[in-house]
Length: 135
Image 1 (spheres, rainbow, N blue to C red):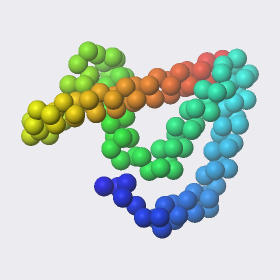
Image 2 (cartoon, one colour):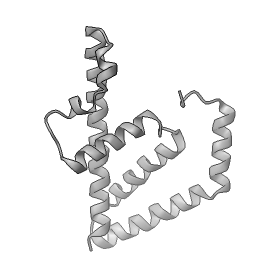
Image 3 (tube, helix red, strand yellow):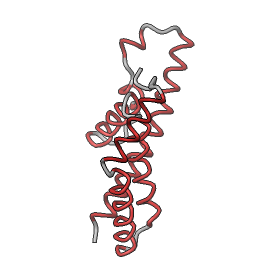
């Protein structure tokens, strides 16, 4: 798995972020976003939440399975919206068919939980993007 990094690898990534002015750009983006939100009459806390979720993906390296799943959910929501069979559409059928009954239940519960979190993230991002694009 990609999450099995050593402390040395995490330190190298952190050093790279510092050298590339990642945090300075992050700070400027948040500051500008808050100012724009206040000018537009929207909630600055939504801007901060949005950038925090973006930074956590970059810093924690979540980009593996969770980010791929989020992108699937995002594509589903953009193409057909919320549907009653979303869990079924997001299930890996080949993998699912190899599981025992108990494992299938656990897998379905995990997919459901991940879907709810991804959907919440999607709507937060859409709300933020809509509030920054509207004048």
